[in-house]
Amino acid sequence: MTEIILTNKKHGMPVLLLTILVYILAVAGTIYFAMAAMVAPMVVCIVILCLGWLTLPGLKVLGPQEALVLTLFGNYVGTLKGEGFYFVNPFCTAVNPAAKTQMNQSPDIEAAKGGGGVLAALAGGSSGLPKEAVNKKISLKIMTLSNARQKINDCLGNPVEIGIAVTWRVVDTAKAVFDVDNFKEFLSLQCDTALRNIVRLYPYDVAPGGEAGHDEESLRGSSEVVAARIQEELQAKVAEAGLEILQARITHLAYASEIAAAMLQRQQASAIIDARKMIVEGAVGTVEMALERLNQSGMVELDEERKAAMVSNLLVVLCGSHEAQPVVNAGSLY
Image (cartoon, rainbow, N blue to C red; front, side, top):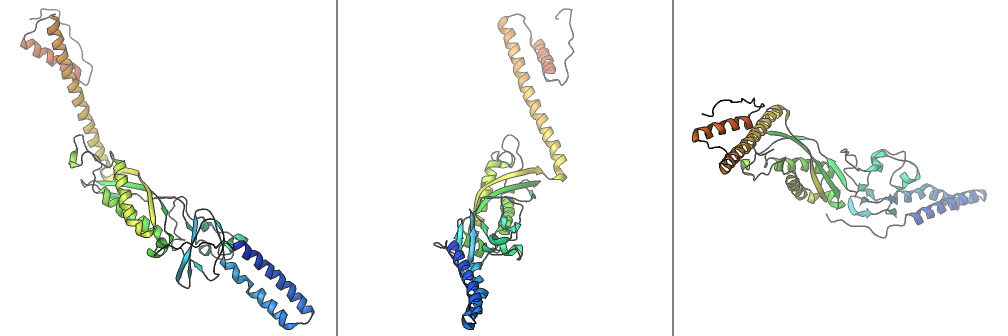
């Protein structure tokens, strides 16, 4: 379906003024001809009073970043875009399958709030009509969809809870209305599938060294890369619905509750091992430097046995988890 933009339709105000003028003349003519006992002209004026309102459904008011898709007896006529006061065929019907779908996104179609008075009538409905009769406009604004959190297994089989926020907008109203049943529900479903397809390719986290062969790319450490891949796949899926994905971001990421405690212990153990490794490397370097300085200064000469004892004592002092208790040897070195 190719989108057709209707132009040169901003004739709403002249038509409204003409309709009001015709009604005034018809009322005046009815009174005049009734007083003059002229039946035929009076009947004509009464018919005009009864049928003159038929032009009112053709008056449409659009605000900034709003569109209205019109059909005539089932055939696609075109789309009104841009703010203005329009007049179209009064028998045209506005179509928006997603009008009643609310997904707690920002901003959504404001026509669902309803309205009354002259502006509501000009927009395609009246205060006496249900809300869905008014809410037929399609918002062209940038909207943010915060999809529900999902429980997905990562590439290592660990269940992960993850949620995303997708920034999107409608770029082709004809495709959005006619090529899919409900473009909002379609977008939400495609968000779920794209998220599952990408998350299962990455581990939640990787240890230093590139565990699992992913070159250190993970859900937690490479969120920008993962979000870019989700956006790319999602755009490929929703292009047929006339939607554009501007941005996708991960809003929630955590292990599932059933393994969260075990994974926390694993992370703590890994952190302790890394810390101990760093402490041992630093201690060995310190001992090596101490022995080298003693040899250079010639302050004391130590045989291999004493060097081994000194190294052992220094490593105990530097690597111990508690403060060392010094022992003063007042006797001979040997």
